[in-house]
Amino acid sequence: MFQDLDKVMQGSLAPYKKMIEVQTEMLERLSRQQIECTQACMKATIQQAMELQQVSNPQELTKLQLDYTHKLEEMVNHASEQNLNTLKEAHRAIEELTLKSMSGNS
Image 1 (cartoon, rainbow, N blue to C red):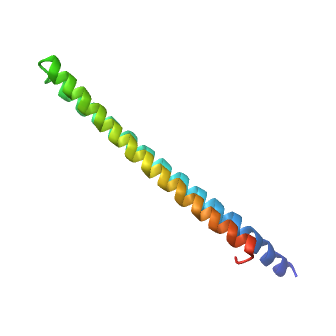
Image 2 (image 1 turned 30 degrees about the vertical axis):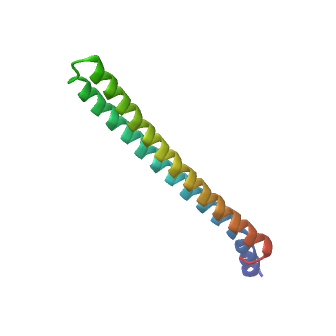
Image 3 (image 1 turned 45 degrees about the horizontal axis):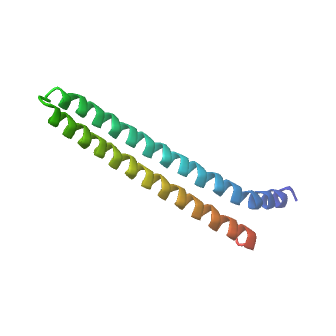
């Protein structure tokens, strides 16, 4: 009897466990993406600082700053797209899990 009750409990908790797995994976991916973006921005900033030492006139400085700004903008936009895709995938997975659970098809 205890084994039957345990099976029922495990079966009813399975969707919650799966949901936690989906959320954990999503958070891990988001964290990795943020770390990668931060590292790329730091590298760009270091490169910018090194290049600033070579500037000899205001036009070069302006061009260098514009290039740097565009590079950072591209990095942040790319990170944003990755984050949104990760969130959408997690949303779809949880939605499918919810529909499956509600229909009784574990």
